[in-house]
Image (tube, rainbow, N blue to C red):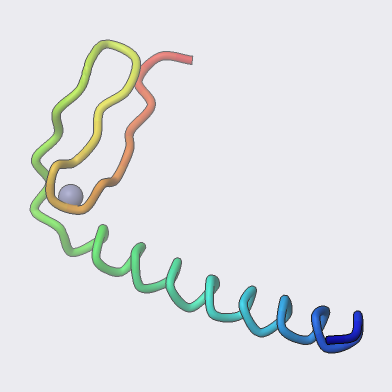
Length: 55
Ligand SMILES: [Zn+2]
């Protein structure tokens, strides 16, 4: 496998990741969240959305 092919494959994977991240944010936007966590951050047990509460 040459470098050019590997770079092409990386680009394809990056596009795939982008599509998957869009899918995640769509799911998270329509989720009826159930957050659990501590004073620093909370995570939705249904969609894994994370809210940072303390910076
Ligand atoms: Zn959620």
